[in-house]
Amino acid sequence: MPGPKDLDPSSSPRALLGAELRHAREKAGLSQEELGLRLFVSGSFIGQLEAGTRRMQPEYARMLDEVLETGGFFLRNCKAANKSKHAEHFAEAAEAEAQATAIRQYAPLLIPGLLQTPAYAWAVNRAYDPTAPEETVEEWTEGRMTRTRLLDHPTRPMLWVVLEEAALRRETGGRVVMAEALRHIAGLARRSRVIVQVLPFSAGAHAAMQGAMKLMEFEDAPPLVYYEGVRTGRLEDDPATVAQLRFTFDLLVASALSQGKSLALIEALAQDYAHEEHS
Image 1 (cartoon, one colour):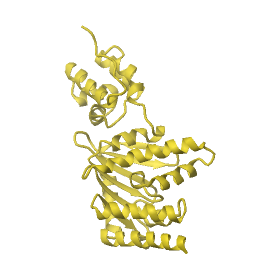
Image 2: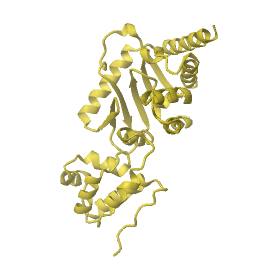
Image 3: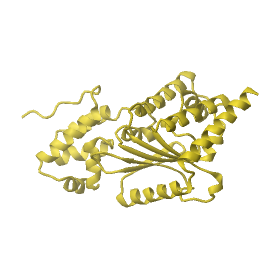
Image 4: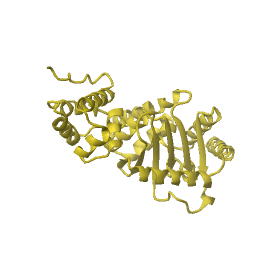
């Protein structure tokens, strides 16, 4: 009996790979938890692979082929399923982000990617690598703008961002760029497309001073949290960790300005940037 065909990289390979995994697991008579035990991972991790919210790494693909007797299918197709425009440390998070039904994000230092304008994104990418060729910076910027198209949908994903005041006051790309960037955020908030709250300097010490985080929820897979640092990032699916970080986000929301006051501050800063540049 012939095995499954190799995946077509042009047709949602991550989703197809997940569907093939579910089919092979059920054919073998294993639950997600039982298969997870054989791979030394959790059942929820298997569920995320099947839902396409986690990328299948070669070491897991090799083990799946052995346990499920799939003749090397998963290892052969890992490469096609893992192709990405994004940096290696962020690729898996970006792909999960695209499938999330809800995203809660804390951004301490810069405007997060989903809320960036092209000019702001270009300035950030140029700062990341001052010696990169112009076409490379343009490619990075286009990749980021592709992510922002998630917000073209009127309601999904639900996006709730807590922005540190520092992210609004750090002049990135110049005053014209900052004015445009803040007006863009204000516009999304006024259209009720995103929830944005500013965590002011006056809030003092808070629960997430050690770094940025992004919590993602999915329709048919367990939630994930993504931590990001300088040229590094990590996805975490441990339920206790995710629950603790959700509590941390709730504390940030409690310390932040209300939506109305946050919007007023963002618009006032945008006006200040525009006025000072004009002067």
